[in-house]
Amino acid sequence: DHKARDEGDVGPNTGGMGAYSPAPVVTPLIEQKIMDLVVRPTLEGMRRDGANYTGFLYAGLMIMDDGTPKVIEFNCRMGDPETQPIMARLQSDLVAICRATLDGTLADERANWDKRASLGVVMAAGGYPGPYATGKQISGLDDVRSNSQKVFHAGTAEVEGEVVTSGGRVLCVVGLGDSVAEAADEAYAAVDMIRWDDVYFRRDIGHRAIARETA
Image (cartoon, rainbow, N blue to C red; front, side):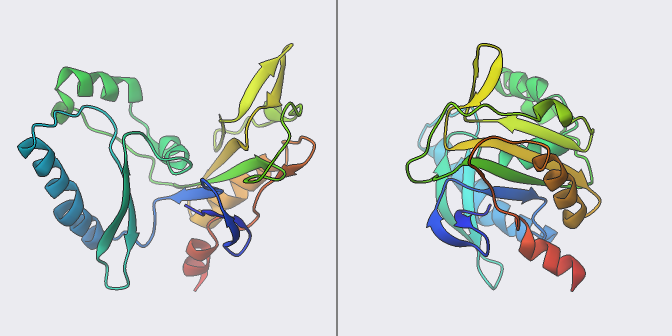
């Protein structure tokens, strides 16, 4: 998740200007550390406290140089914009998974994932995270038709049959590819089809992962 507004990961902090999945730094060993040091102890602590929570529990983590996970925050929701690239890779029925969670039968469900990488680019209103205008008409949404591209709406509204901006982070445009670089190419090809007055987005989402792929 790229929090900084501007390319090179500089500028003011935002809710997120883009993300990619899977994260190459999260190896099977680090994933096991996350489960052993963060996830399972959290669930066990909630059980001991009698907190019978049902829903999404999102753990925001930082991975230290030695591979140790550190918790930044927990949220009782999906993370944005991390969720959009993850959802683009989910091949199972999300509704069935949610129903199984409510019914207490989640252990019987299996989530199937697209093996390809995904990358999401947030298209924001100019000025975000500071003051920004709304009500800008968005064009080009119908031009995004590839099965390797998907547009998630966030700060949008429909006015007289037209889609207009209604927030700071307006869209998250996701691409799928055999590498993070290919996923970025797909995402930015879709981004370039979409337009509105004073749109803003970063051109370097996933740059560290892409650099690792080509090293």
